[in-house]
Image 1: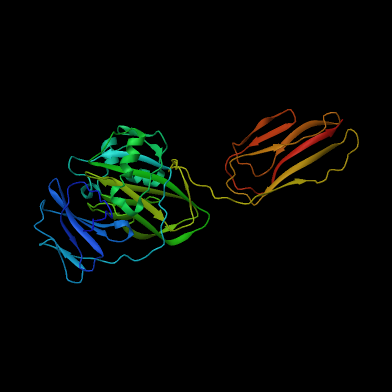
Image 2: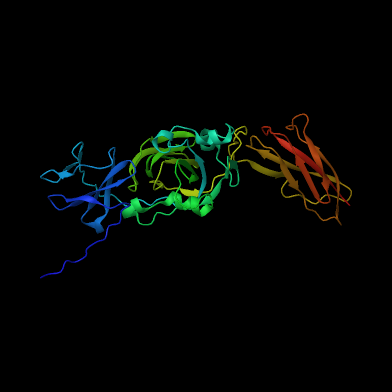
Length: 380
């Protein structure tokens, strides 16, 4: 008599029943029951029995499950599901972070899909902080919203082939110290800055979640899936445009009960940074290439007692908020006499008096025209 050989131990949340192999031997299906719902679980019989699907059903006890003769469909007696062969893809690297994190409670028994479009940040802050505010302007570590302060943490993505057992958002929340164990009826907010050296349009962003997910990029909602589901790695893909410079990414995952999971990746050449807030009332000043020149250059030695001037000129500069000029000279041979402002300074501007061998000037924002200032030196 031959002894059976243990091939794989599959761990679930409850005792499985109605265990059925597909006729072609590619899949193993069984049912778990828990709470007021049941779950139909499907594993591949290759790839270490990787779990490929988890279907929530409305009735707690399923009457039975049955495969179609060709193994392409499965039914619980009420609904028929088609089994889709997974398309081989290049492995995607999840964004580990570090991210900036916040959580907020939902209404009781309203976590998950029902809270996807509910602004939980506005609810806990009395309207002083909103999802749109954070998605547009960012946040700082330590900023308080409701009962929590934004905190920095990475998120793990180990065991990607068995993503139902990854409770990685719960891990983050417990690691920060906001909870000790499972959390229900909450929404998590993960914020990160994607920095790009170039503009990159129509790049794929990939996400997965347990339960619902909503994504903002640079203040705009670019994707949402109001769904109650288990995690299965990257479950949704959509295209986004990445601008040159900083791109603020906010991801919301709303959880009802059980596992709390988030996967995010982007097929773009970016670096990940902890974001900080920006003042929406401040206008971003574009970079310009200004040219600074000194006239004359070089300076010919004057006669003893003769005055000579050094002019500092700036061209092709706009929106200059201030400048500093430093002149170094031999105090045993030269004596500082005076400075004069050029004709581009607006009315009301001022200069800070010189210190020792240094002359410092400040000016208001103004387009540069010609000579900034004239400095006179006298030969001792």
